[in-house]
Image (cartoon, rainbow, N blue to C red; front, top):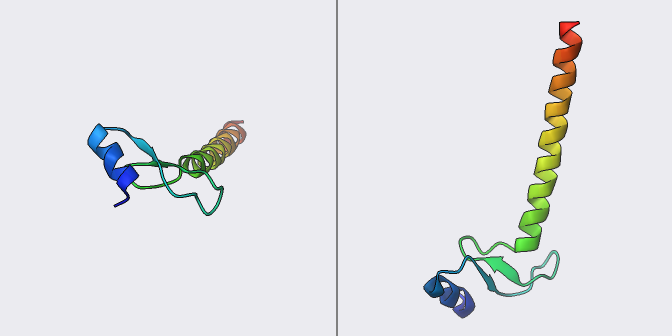
Length: 67
């Protein structure tokens, strides 16, 4: 366990400054799983967009079936 992470855990924080991310270079990481904050947010945005698009397609199919 990294000393910065251990210190953040001891202080009850949810994030800490760790090693640079190999994808984006960001150093802010989540304590719970050591994931890069920026990359995690980017993945969540992509997932949300895909979910919205799937829901839009379902609504369009339901509307077409109802007519």
